[in-house]
Length: 68
Image (cartoon, rainbow, N blue to C red; front, side, top):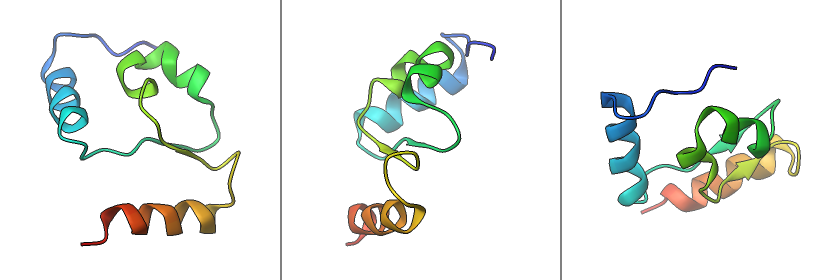
């Protein structure tokens, strides 16, 4: 995987979303270690993994997080 270049618009948008707790990383068919190679900032956040939890559990947890 190629690493996301820092300093671009996408990096700034990602920083803004992470700072406001508007982004929940969910890894599927990969690992946080592999994500760290591409985006250390995103991989540093707590998130959900389909390798550790069934997709139904991931969806339920995500629904809890976004519920008003």
